Length: 433
Ligand SMILES: Cc1cc2nc3c(=O)[nH]c(=O)nc-3n(C[C@H](O)[C@H](O)[C@H](O)COP(=O)(O)OP(=O)(O)OC[C@H]3O[C@@H](n4cnc5c(N)ncnc54)[C@H](O)[C@@H]3O)c2cc1C
Image (cartoon, rainbow, N blue to C red):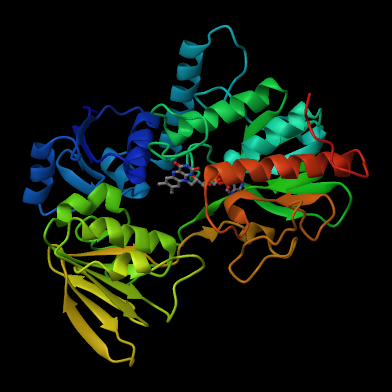
């Protein structure tokens, strides 16, 4: 089969662009990258095709907007099995090239994650962390340094919130240009140096009813004296009518990636959280008009509308709900329900959606620990859940702001709490020396 011609139109700071590029690389395909934030000609090429967002991937001139894994595979002519086999082969090759002296058969190119073996299933770990993001990795650093036999399980080490972050904006001590994945790999490597093990697998369910906790994965059951849940939070998947059809053609989720496409245009921003307000503020620097639709009477948490109230090109609509997105080639109108529940149709060029905010990925826990009505795990100051020996933190618990540094701090607290639990100490033992 001849090699497909692949062009990825990307933008700086675009997490989904990183996902497309990583997938193509994993599956063994070469591509030409055209960064539309840096090169105006690429930006113009997208505009000519009426594309108003990145990533936009052309495979033999067939277009994929956003990160659509299934469509990418279909156009590349590969099955799920072929993609997985190619990814494993490339990971093994990358590892062999990087460190030929090491013997491990890693499931990941950085050599940190390994497959689940019989040894892993036969062990009773002191601490198992579910999730290897900054929360889980930091917990592993502290736990392993505290001499706990530590295992980190992660289903997709390159797809967590930090891992897909293109550029670290703020993390204490990080002054240079660094991707989220590079920062995360440093944390994981540090934990591994202290003796923590990392496996790649999806935790399907848990049983915390006995002293030795059971964590069920496809390969079997992992046993632990204590567990830290650091599974992060992601955007929910329920879609508005028209959302999927117009993604990349007027529907966007990222002003950093796509604001430039809406210079002097009219956009709607839909959401009630800090992110929506921040994004509306960024868009107000580019757009003729920004219409902010807030579904309820109030914004959430600490979100502060005052930054927008003084901007002449921002209109704020409280109790307005987005019902439908309409258009032909790209977004042209939105149908909304106003504060009197009357339907109105507005002309807009784009819609930026920050609707559900982030939802914690905790459904697999069912009733094993107490969660609030949005699925956030309920913990105390020591990050203890209602179950003895089970801790949670990072984006999976309700925090005023979601930041890697806070997740890492949670991991540290939880690991020290776990150490206290496993070694039956009366107090937390700090690691000063
Ligand atoms: C675009 C963007 C830019 C950002 N920039 C910054 C920044 O500059 N500085 C900063 O401090 N913060 C930044 N953040 C926020 C930061 O990335 C998050 O707050 C942080 O990553 C949360 O860490 P976590 O460990 O709780 O979750 P995550 O980083 O999401 O990690 C959770 C991990 O759990 C795994 N997992 C989930 N479910 C399961 C399961 N069932 N079984 C096994 N594994 C599972 C996932 O694969 C994932 O690897 C940014 C966020 C975004 C979206």
